[in-house]
Length: 194
Image 1 (cartoon, rainbow, N blue to C red):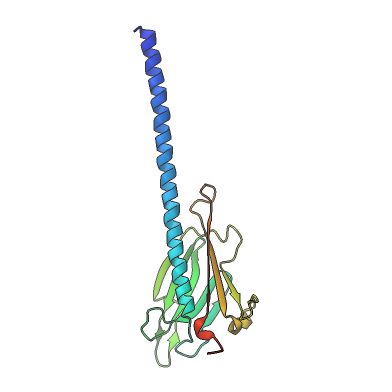
Image 2: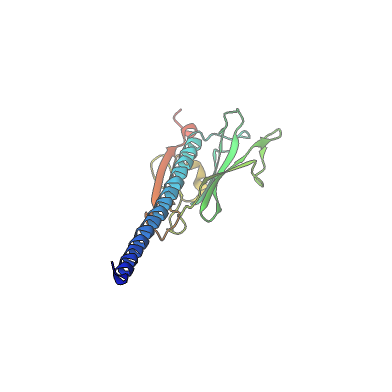
């Protein structure tokens, strides 16, 4: 084998190894991104399940206040005995950052019971990388018993059904794309025909 043939062989081998190494590296980066996206979607799914469970159990507050207290497109506040201790808590699902939804819990204190909503007693992050603002879509939707949308907060006592949707994507400019999670719940403890 001549020196020229040896140099050509080494150059071809080097180029081939660089191509293979680059392909393997890209595969690991893509797989890491895909796993991270799947992890955040799973967290959002669990957060949505917690939200629906709490909304279904919405009930009148310890001080007699109507179960639904705040109805905004990106924030909802209601009363529910989420920890099953026979004391109703005030719960808010709200954005604590532009892409993070948290569940904030406020316990009743005193007699008669009052709810201090200045600082939550507990705050739980339910979902990160929520892209609803980027997509200009609401998170919460409210309906009366006939299925008509309720948008005016002065009609809060008419709400009997709530829908929620979140769009999750850890990097909006990369594939795989966005995942939209939707769910809904009827307010069990507010039915008038009981």
